[in-house]
Image (cartoon, rainbow, N blue to C red; front, side):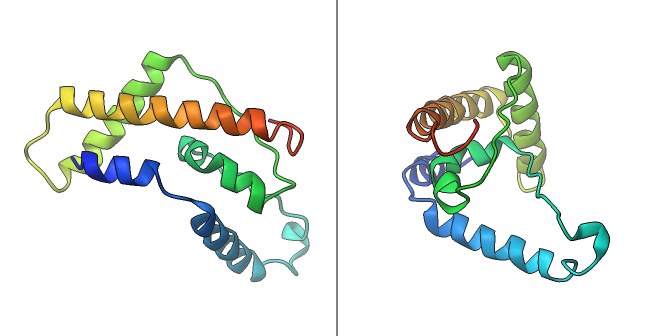
Length: 128
């Protein structure tokens, strides 16, 4: 449980991270680009964590197509808290579900607000 890290992360410019992300994907695709099966491969990246970097993603990947799946918030938060608790449980025996819930809730409310702002700002760049 590192609330200071979550606050720090929320205030970072993710552009450098997304540039590295693009280079990494290019590196992975390099080895298969001459194989007919993969010659026109489109990457499909499925994780809600990309919402945190949506503004930078659309700058670095101007031809990106975003499919924003909407889930019932209670189900979504339950899933995220379960995942967080699973990973935190690998390194700690002291887990407080109420702290995990509050921390995740606050983090994701901020992420969704930022993503909605990025969506509005970039509506002409990509089909979101």
